[in-house]
Image (cartoon, rainbow, N blue to C red; front, side, top):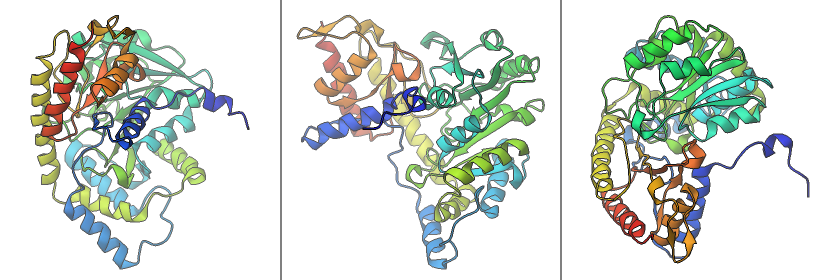
Length: 398
């Protein structure tokens, strides 16, 4: 057997994917598991987007390799979307389309990080940020937050974290896993800090842009001094229920786009040609299905928050975006079930899976070991049953 590389050994397995696999294994044994682990809308891709894909297939025009950075008409559509929704002016040369936003992020990190570079990552964070940074032999620098601060960092914390080695700040808003959304005023305070540190670039992960209950989405790239120092990463998975289509994109300064185009040409080349054509329709066509999904998620959020209030010793903020709740469950650490101790969030997540038959994800993988993440991208019926099970399982701990 070949030993794995030092590069791979620096990386942890994805906590979300691991829990989803465990829940599937139990389900295969006939156990009725309700999975609230993966961040995947439970809606179908809207019909008009599917129809666009069928037309692209039938046209016979998209059977060949696609351009590495994406078809020109798609990159133009992305520019139009960014102008319409975000008041951001880009040209197709600023856009690189990839196989999901995850690849867009990897392209950026691999293209620009060296050993010794630092990347500031507010915690809690999406599980892949630090692992991708580690793949590049660079150093994640975490800024910790708590439920009491709505899981948001402050400008003072950002200032303190920046060093001469800092290359990027990467964050998501709306956030995975917390559902927190940075306001325009909060982003303005970050901009004032970043203006004093022009060597720091920002990676703004906006994949949950359309699942925002707080009002109009705000991108840090909208601030004039940050436009040329921000890489906006977005994609189709969350807002359009297109997780399986694997379309992500970045809008970036030209030198960043060229570097990522070069890298992508040696890794995957251009992404799926038919999915690209469907994405044009998604971006420029009827947006009502996306708005309807957002309202359904809002209703589910309120349902889940109401049920969490009935569970003793669970502390939760009110998420204003995405489709997750991220309660602090540390009051249950140190308890046990039939002699088996619950030492941390990992133990609690496994306990809820095996005793409550509800799959959630430990906060350890998100940089918040006191918390646990539940996705409410599930039917209201399943959510009611799932949190009833959670409440009953937690009540059994002594």
